[in-house]
Length: 98
Length: 502
Image (tube, rainbow over all chains, first blue to last red; front, side):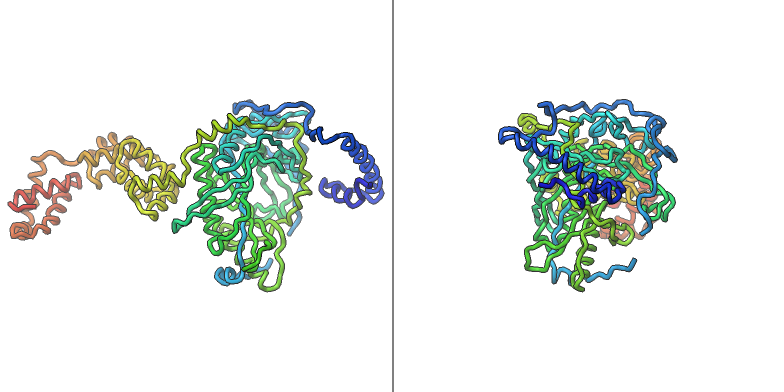
C-alpha cells in the first residue's frame, strides 16, 4: 500500500513553501513512503487496549500561575533576526500586487 | 476591481434564506500570555514583551496559564456547554510571519467546551436561541505593519514589520452552530448575539471585551440557500468585523451580495472577505485553505488538560447572574420600559447606574444623570460613559444633595460640570463655586419682595386668582439669585406674600 504519492509531496512542499524539482519530488516521495510505512507498523501491534498517545508521560493539568516573569529586552529578542526596522522583525514581501 | 452589484435586501430575502455562523475571538484579561510568563499589557514598546517561548526559539517549552484554562471553563459554562473531561492542544501549521513558531497553538477536535447555547433578546423582546458548537483555547498572533504599499495594505507592500508583543496572548474562540431560521432578522440576530456575548464575557470578569481595542473580534460566515431548500449554500467568511454595528452591516451586505451573484446565475467562491467600515461593504481576501492544509496534530510540548469535575462544579457555582436575566430584574426594579432599558444598555450605563444606586442614590436619579447630562457629555467628547472622570459615588453624592434640597437641578448640573472639569468631588465644587441653594430665608424674602415690586401687573393677576402666573415671578427670583434658590420654596413665599392659596 503506497503511503504517499508524488502529488501529495508536491502539495506539502507548497504548504511548507519549499521549492522542489521534479527529481526531488520522486526522491522524497520514495523516502517519505518508507518512513510512513515504518510508522504504520506501530498500528499493527497496537491493539484496542492501547490508546493513541501524544505524550510519553502520563501527565495532565501541568499549569502555571498567572504571574508575570521578566521578558527579553527588545534588543535580545531581535538579536537573532536577519533584518530589523523600527525595533520590529523585518520580513520580505508577503503578497505581490493584486 | 469592479463595484459589486447588490440586489435590495427585500428582494434577496424574497428568494433566499440566510444561514450564518459566527466566530468570536475573545482576548482574555490575564496578566500573562497563554503559554509563557510575558506580560499582556497593551501599548508597550514593540517586542518588549517576548521570550524564547512566544518567539518559538528552539528548546523553549510552553506551560499553560491556569487562569486561561479557568476562564475558558467559565465561558463554556456560561454558554451552557459541556466541559471536556480531557482535552489537548493542537498545532495549527501555516506559513505566515505573524507567528514566529510557524504554527498557532490551538485546539482542534478536542475543544474544552462544546454543545451549548446562548439566548439573545431581539429589539422587540423576542428571544432567539443561538446554538454554540464549541469554545476552545488558543493564542493571539503578532501585529504586522506593511510598509511601502498604498495605505498600509499587504498588497504591494515592499516588506512587513512584526511586533510579537501580542503573539501568545490567550484567546478563546467561540463558534456557533449554523444559525438557521432567522430569515430577514439574521443581521439583527448576529448583532444581538455578539452584544449578549460581550455582556456575558464582561460579567464573567474574564475580559473587558472592548471591541474597539480588538479584545473581541467577530468573523461572520454567511451563505444563502433558495427558500424552501435544506442544503447550505457556499459560504463566505468576513473577517475581523469589530463593532456591533459592523456585524449587522456585514451580514446585511453579504446577503445582498450573495443574492446578486446567485440570482444572476453565478457561484459564490469560498473565500475570506474584508469588511470596510467606511461604506459597510466587503471585498475579496484570500481563497481559504482547506482545514487539512493546516496539518493539525496534537501539541507534543503540552500535556492534556483534564479539568476535575469538582473544579468545574465550583466554577459553575461561582457564575454571576446572566446579563439578560439581570437586565430583566433591573428593568423591573427600576420600573422602566423595554425601550429605555435597551437605551441604557446601548449607552453602557447599566453597571454605572447599579453602582450609583449601590452608593445610595434613588434609581430614577441615577438614571437621570447618567442618561442625561453625563451621556450628553460623553457623546460630545467622544468618550464612553465609563471613561468620564466622574465616579458613581460622586453622582450619588450629587443626587443626595438634590434630595436634601441643598442643590436644585440647575445647580446640580453645574456641580457635575465642575467634577468633569477636574475641580474635585461634588462637595469641593459646591464650596469653590459657591453653588448652595439660597436657604437664607431673609435673603430669599427680600428677593421675592423685589420681584413683586418690579412686576406689579403680574402680582395683581396672581392676587386676582391666576396662580399660574406665579411662574413668571419665580423665574424673576431665580434670575436674581442666579439660579441658587429652591424654586419650590420661592413659589411658596410668593403665594404667601400675595395672600393666595397654592
